[in-house]
Structure formats: structure tokens, C-alpha cells
Image 1 (cartoon, rainbow, N blue to C red):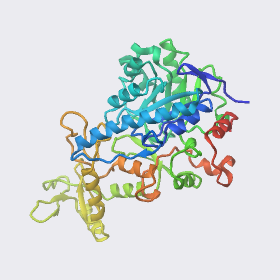
Image 2 (image 1 turned 90 degrees about the vertical axis):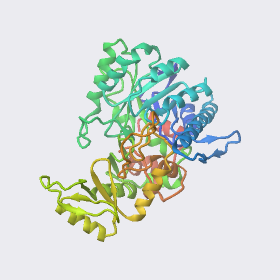
Image 3 (image 1 turned 180 degrees about the vertical axis):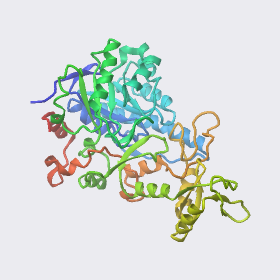
Image 4 (image 1 turned 180 degrees about the horizontal axis):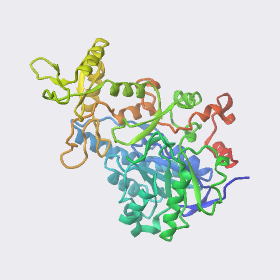
Amino acid sequence: MSLVEPMVVSGQEVWPLVEGGKGVAVSNGRTAGAWAAAGGVGTISGVNADVVDDNGEYVPLTYRGRNRRERHEELVAYSIRGAISQARIAHELRRGEGRIHLNVLWEMAACERILKGVLEGARGLVHGVTCGAGMPYRLSEICARYEVYYYPIVSSARAFRALWKRAYHRFSDWLGAVVYEDPWLAGGHNGLSNSEDPKAPESPYPRVLEIRKFLRSIGLDHIPIVMAGGVWNLSEWKDWIGNRELGPIAFQFGTRPLLTKESPIPEAWKKRLLELEPGDVLLHRFSPTGFYSSAIYNDFLRELVERSERQVPVRAEASPEEGFTAYFPLARNKRGVYMRPEDHARVQQWIEAGYSQPMRTPDDTMIFVTPERARRIRRDQADCMGCLSQCKFSSWKQEENYTTGRPPDPRSFCIQKTLQDVAHGRGDPLDNQLVFAGHNVFRFRQDPFYANGFVPTVRQLVQRILSGA
């Protein structure tokens, strides 16, 4: 007995349960194939997917490029090859059941090139494309060309309306659904706008209803809306299921698929999921993308918070009218900067505590870190491989002269490095890496389904969800 009825998604009747895409080797062919085989919609991530060879062996990417542009091209080629290999695995495992979607981020490096390359090399293996993290205007055109359905990820009706009026109205036949991703509850990068308060979450119902009203106004009332972010079990969404006002609704699960037998994340990560408590996820804005994102509040994020707290405004010249009268020397034979006397006193305390290395930011401020941390930041910036369309941490930009034109921002971090390390269980311990998670992740510890450390298969999880729990 299920609380939901099957629904046509990407041309086939399936359970309206969608595996949320999680990038950099987390949502892969194995998880997606198992989810589809259970009758739902599996999702492989096209964000730097792992290459798996014909023998089923992982082939890591070893950069040989001497500069960012060369490493960028290596990453693009690897990403295409990796996503195709994962699509083949998913197709084989689904055994004709369910659907397979590809998830990409519009702000990732060379997104259009990668998307076209994967759809070309995996024809017939991918049935739909979900895409968020930006305004993917060209998504509809690309998907229509390859005859796959497109699923824009938005956090408001205003965002979808803009996409529709600019581009999507020309390719309405291939619109599979609109994915509403709650910006206060979802893990990973979130679509909070500058007009929305990150500390004042809004109910998803009226926001989703606004999307439905717009779909009705353009004659697309039959198009499903996928609720994503904060979805744990279906019994909590009974007032949404079969609701005529909301129309057809499907549900996306991003956090729960992390803890399955098929999930490729390291065992230490799975164990940590069973230990988390309410409040252990932080909505922050340290990502080099500039977007808000949600991740486990561990030592990695704590250091970033503290790094920004050791920050003072500075001026190149004394400015008595603003109070910038205290001189601070930067280095031998180099000009210093001016700061307010009270800030100068704080800086002296930081230096005495070991945070003796000043680093300029793009915003006329300066942070203070340990010399070791400064060396690590500069090393990571130098090793940039151009994983984003533009990156505030390294000042990389994939177009024109390959720079944003702004100084690199030491208040951020190399997202490619840390996500690769945590996904593959290498580098620093789990506490010292960025670990994305939705704000409901603490429920692993509370849910009796996971009692005594039980880890289900994907099929067991899907059956559990269908039962309403």
C-alpha cells in the first residue's frame, strides 16, 4: 500500500520519487540504477563524475596541465567521460525500470559543453536533465535537441517565470517538471535571493502554489512540480498528495539516499550521518560560487567562520574623517595600510595568538590567519583547475581573459579539492572537509528504521518511503 500513485515522468510511468542529484562522485550510476530499478527516478550527477573503465575500476584524474586553462580542459574532458560511464552503469542496473536523469549545475565549468558531450555520448541512456545553481536559459534548447526532458531547479515562481519567458516557452513539449528546491531546507547550494532572509524560513506551500498558478496561466497545469528539500517521509506530506490546488506533485529525496548499501560515500561518512543532531547543519555563504549552501557544521566550516571574524576594514591612505589613523606595516620595504585604532588593537591580539599572516580580500578588508593556513590558501589558489564558470576563491573565469578581474578571496575555499577528498575518503579527516547535507539529516539518528546502525539497500529505502515512513 502506497500513499502515492504512479506518475508519468520522462515518458514512462514511475513512482513519483526522485533521487536528488549530489555532485562530485556521490550520486553515481550505481545509486541511480538501483533507484530506477525500484521504480523511481534515479539521478546521476554530471558534476565531475568519476570515470569507471570497462573493468569497473575507478580511474582518478591526474592533472598534467601547467596552468589553469590546461587543467580546466582536462577536467572538462574527464567530466564528460565520467558521466557517460556512470550513465552506462545506471542503464544496465535499472533493467528497463524507472527513469534515469542527469543532474548538472549551470555554474559549473563549461556546463553546456559537458551537458552536450554527455547527451551525445549517452544517447538513449539518459531520459531527463535536472539543472540548478544559476539561471539555465539554454537548458531547454539543449535538451530538446537531444530529445530528453528538462527539469529546471528553482526556488521561486519568479525564477521559473523568467526562464519561461526568455527561453522555455519555445520548448514546452520537453518540459518534464519544475523542481522546487526549498532554499532553507535543502542540502548543497541553495537558491536564496538577496531579498530573502536566510534566518527567516518560509513555508514551501505558498511558494509552490505560486509556481502552480503560473503553470496554469500558460496552459501547463498537467506538468508536475517536484518538491525538494526537507522531504523525509510521505506521511508528513499527506495534505500535498492528491491536492487539487497544488496539482500533480512528486517528491525528491537528497539526504536519505546517502545512507544506503549502494551509496559510494565512505563508511566514516555514513557513520557520521547516524550521529548528527538538530542544528548540526549550517546555512552559509562561504562557497566560491557566491551562493548560499548547507553543510554539516564541522571544523571545516568553523574555521571559515572564525577566519571571517578575524577581519578588519583597511585603507591604503590615512583617512581621519573615517577614523583610519592607525598604521599597520605589511612587510619589509612594502607600504602598509591604515585601520581604525580599535581594530589595530584587535589585530595585535590576533597576532599574539598566532594569527600573524594578513591576507587582503576584494572588499577593502584584511583577514588574519596562521602562516600555515596562508600557505595552504595560496597553494590551493595556485592549483585551481577551473571547476566553476567563475570562482571568487581563485578569481578564475572560464571566458574572455580567464579572470573575474577581482582579487582572489581568501575567505572562501577550493570546493573541488574538498569535495573530491571527502567523497573518496582521502586527505584530512571528515571533520576537516566540506560535507553537504540537508537540514533534516539529524533524523537518521531519530528514525527507528535506522536503529542499531541499520543501512538499507536502495530498494528497501524506496519501499520504506512508499509505505509513508
